[in-house]
Image (cartoon, rainbow, N blue to C red; front, top):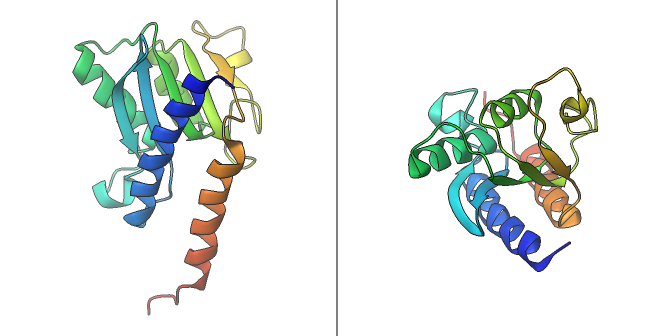
Length: 156
């Protein structure tokens, strides 16, 4: 892991903590172009009443606005959790060059855990994938969040 990868993942972790503080699943993402962050996002589907408001999608939207293009060639996306199928579709449509993720997601991850859509030769765009960057810290944030959620009494 390069110092740059660690720094960008730490920024994504800070965004994930922000999501957790709002009772959203703590996932954060940043989009990087030429060594600088051009997009930021964290999970917000509950707050926005929007099932597509995952961290990756929010970061892609922010980057596209900041760059002025819906295509993000040459960009890298750093996310604290392995992307799901929806987010991976958005990543591919945006033409993101690289995806770097922290924790694997054995239930919905499609960068190697459940499926590996990035290795599907029939698709017209392929991002390079690096997993496991600050995986323990990313995974612990999620585990702690869900453990705390299980301790909360259910609403009547």
